[in-house]
Length: 268
Image (cartoon, rainbow, N blue to C red; front, side, top):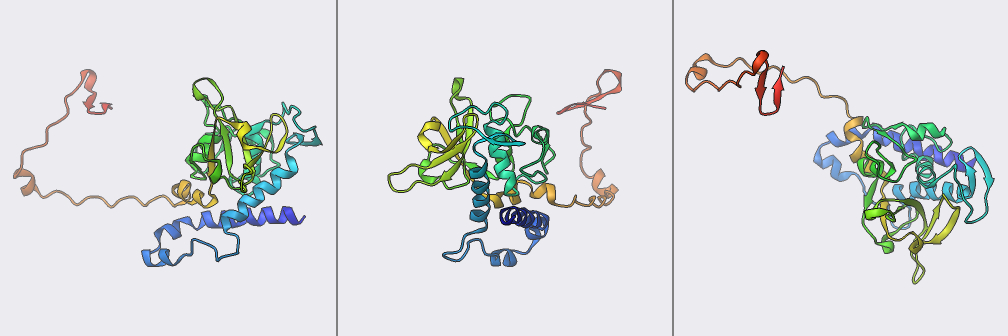
């Protein structure tokens, strides 16, 4: 119950922050500068707390048989009904980082997730397919994730690893960073497809690290959260004298059938 409450509080905090994004963006510079961006020493930042919720959820579900079947499989066993991208997406949702989705929502909701930017994403997918926006696209479009390349030394718990093991470097796999690098010990990763917990980062090579910044959603989805701008006031009528004082603007040539063409093609 405590962990469930923590997840709900984290999601509510992020939702309130997103709801307040227009006001924050519109605030005078002096006020914006007054907003603290780092936590005091020794106190976890908001970003750290939400990444911690991700990892807490992932640690409990790395061996699940399916999203709705918590029967554990053996370490390294196949999970054909609960694959890598879905596992990472549900961990993100547990921390409130997929607005509108919860970690226990039906699989189809992840397959056809409509984000605040109006795009539909297949969060069950990491491989690039032309007809889909996949999990990686969601991370980039939302500004939740920043691809920093192959830099395991920068990995933090709650970040995402993407493997580029397909033809021509195609994306083939993903997992969630469970522990950061510690001295000579590499970061570890939790992942699905084959159940892995605290598995060495190098097993996912060739890979990129996607750093997760929960407050990045403010940038990625701020436009979607902001109210629509009011209609612009009509321009004042042109002064006839000033119009006579300069050459008339050339008209776009007329195409057959009365369709006017311009630099961007036919204008009906």
